[in-house]
Structures are given as C-alpha cells and as structure tokens.
Image 1 (cartoon, rainbow, N blue to C red):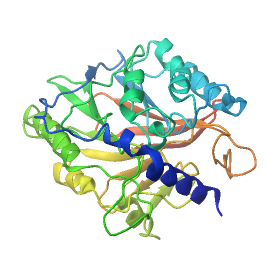
Image 2: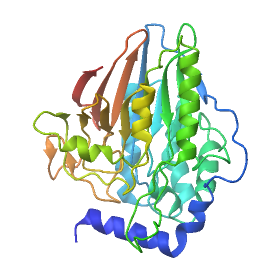
Image 3: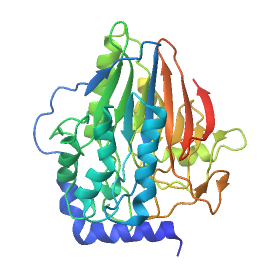
Amino acid sequence: MKRRQFLKDAAWAGVLAAAAPSLAACAPKAEESKAARLAATLPYRPDGTFTLVQFTDTHYIAGDPRSARALECVKEALEGVKPDLVIHTGDIVFGKPDLESAKEILTPLAESGIPWAVALGNHDSQFGSSRDQMYSLIRSLPGCLNTEPDPAIYGCSNDAIGLEGVNGPDRVFYLFDSMDAVKLKGLGDAHCYDYIRSSQLDWYKQISVQLADGNAGEPVPALAFFHIPLREIERALLEAPNRFLVGNNCEEPCPSRVNSGLFGLFLEREDVQAVVTGHDHDCDYVLRGETGVYFIYGRFSGCDTVYNHLGREGVSDQKVSGCRVFQFRKGEPGFRTWVRLLGGEKQQVLDLI
C-alpha cells in the first residue's frame, strides 16, 4: 500500500472511530452570524513592498527527534526572509501531545514579532484535543491574528487579512477552514475529505462585496489560503499540453469528493487570483487554470514524521523542507512568488498577474 493511501485510511479510521465530536465542535450552531470584518489591516513597508511566508504541513510532534527539521525550517525562514506576515496552512501537528506540539512549532512565530495566522488542516484535531481546543491554544499565542470563531460559520479558522491601500484595503488574504473528513450519505465508509460549506461561502461573499463597494465597485485583489485543495485542480491538471505548470508535481491531488462551489464564487466575484493550499506533500507547483486563477501549493515545511520526498532537484533521496514566499508591491496588480528551501536556495521565482 502506498504511504499516501495508508495515511488517508488511517486518518479516516480515526474519524469514524473517535474524531466526530471534535469535528462537530466547530460546526455552525443555530445563531446569527456576526458582521463580517477583517481580522487585521497591515501596512506595506516604506519601500512599498509586503512579504508573506507560507508554511504548511509541519506535522510536528513534540519530543520526537524526527521533528527537528521542521523546527529548523521555520526558524531559519523567519530569520532569512523576515516577512511581514506568516500564514500556516495547516497540519501543524501529527501526534500527541498535540497542544504541546502546536505550541512548540508555533513558538518561533510567537516570539518573532511578526503577525501570523493559521488555516487549520485535517490532522490538527485528530490527536486528542478538539478543533476548538487546538484553535483556542493557537489564538492565545502572541502575534496571532486569527479571530474568535463565528458560531454561525462552519469551522474555526475563517479569517480575512487586508493590506492597507490609499482608500481602504487594496489586497486581501482569505483563510478558510477546510476541516477534516466527513461521512456522506450513500457512500458508506468511503473516505471523503470535508469541503468548504455554504456558511463559509456566504462569509467570504459578504466581505468581498463590502470591499468592492468601498473600492468604487471594483473587486479587491485577493489570495485564498486553506489546507485541502479544491476539486477544480484536477481539471486544471488535465488541460495539458496548454497548461502553465512550474514546480514539482509528484503526487495526485487529494481534494474532497464534493465540489464546494467556492471556486465558482471566486470566479463570480472576480477577486481571488490564486488558491494556495498544502496537504499534498510531494507537490509545490504553480498551475494556471483555464480561467486564469492560479492553483499554488506551498512547499512542504515538515519533517520525517510523515511521508515526504521532495529534494533540491525534484524527487530525490535528499529530502529538503522549505516554505513558499509571496511578495506584493503597493499599486501593482500581480505578485511575485518563489519557493525557499532550508538553507536559503530559491526555486520557481515567478511574477504572476
């Protein structure tokens, strides 16, 4: 059995046996939603630039020597890049003690003085603590921008962070909680990753409309960050030979079986330029879909507690963790992105519009 399939089956078995209560803890309750708002609006640097680092899939286990590379990767990237914002797209931990593990791997962020936020992954509520408990611990750490969960919105880590423009935010980063797994009627015990729910779509649309209304009706450019990729990435991968793909594509994507409708809403709102995810450890590519929206994987930031095969020149026996970097310039519509490997090497330097 392939290691990736084993990981999926083991996770699904845990969900069926014990994890359902922790998933339900973040499900929406019958309460009125709070007014949609930005978690924060951050300034550009004096030179007009803004740099964001994405970590993903650190899969950290406190006290496990196999986790050493993940902690080194996080510390070195913070020092080497000195970003203005950090977003972790989930699977922060991969074992017990889960809360201690999360605190340990996130402490470099908390001590850096750099604002940061998370979009939780499917494994972040599978090792004893509920999703609410994990999210509460994360929010208690210094520098975290994540806000208190809205009881009417599915999941915990649904947030929006803006960049300060002349007449209001001129760019926004949406974070969605793609949750864990779900049982679907008619599929029996077949594995199905969860999907972005209607309450989350409503939340995003409300903020998107508000920002456009404050921008003379024009959509405010955005990137969307979450853990589990959307089904539309599979269609984009089939568009060869005309597709634009740069980076390592070394495993098939593992989205939900359910098309959430989120991508269609992105197209309707005309603001999200790229969907940025993790989850599939052996992928770190940038893929341009037929609609012009980019599908972007972060670079695996983890260690040897879980499968990973990416090296310096594609798949090799020399595993190298890293992160993805995004750079924005005030007043310019596109952005630059690249992969930074542990040790400082840059790969895939791309200017995207």
